[in-house]
Image 1 (tube, rainbow, N blue to C red):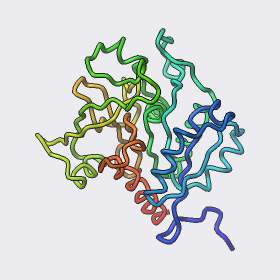
Image 2: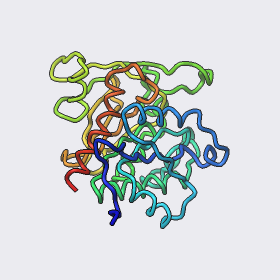
Image 3: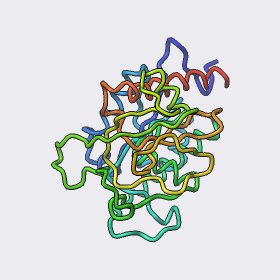
Length: 265
C-alpha cells in the first residue's frame, strides 16, 4: 500500500511548494520573477511545485498536505494592515487577499506538521503577521534611514541595491554564515545583501527572534524558536544571488531540514 504522505529520501527530491507571487501574475502567467525561486530550489536538489492562489481552502489543504516544505516568495503587493490591526498608510501598496489566504494556510499547516519554511521578503512579512507581529508600512517615510532598502524610483531592470547586515549569533543563519566563511566580528557575522523592500518587520510575531539587522536597525531576518522546527524568514532576495555563499546555503539548508524532518515523522 502506498503511504498517504510519501516521505522524501536521498533518492527523491523533496517537493517544495511555492505560491504564485500575486493573483495577477498567476492569471497572466507571468513567471519572470517566480522562476528565480524555482531555479534556486532545483539547484538545492528540491523539486519546486506551483501552489495556486485561486484554490478553495479545501483544495489548497489537499495539495499542501502532500508537499514536504515551502518557500514563500516576495511580491509587489503589501500585507493588509488590517491583519495586524493598523490603519493603512499613504505609501502602503494594494494587498492580495488570495496570496494572504494561501500563505496563512501554508503556515498553519507547516507549523502543525513541522514542515520547513523559507520566507522571503513579502513572505517574511507574511510570516511575521501570521504569528501576530506587525510591520513598518514604509521604511523611508517611517524610519527616515539613509540606507536604500527599496528599488522604488529605479528603472525596472536596475540591479538591486546592496547594503551590509549583521547576522546575530546562535541561530540557524549564523551556523550557515560560519560554514560559508563569513567574518565573525564581535560574536556576529557581517554580510552584504541585496534589497528590494519598502516594508519590514516591526513588532516580532510569537516565537520569532531577530536573526539579522541592517546598520539602521531594520530587521533583515527572523527565525522561529525553539529550533525544533526550521522556519527562517529573510528580507533580502537569496534567489537572485546565485554566487552568494550564504544565500545559496539557505536553500540547501531548507532541503536538508526537510529530509531531517521527514526522517523523524
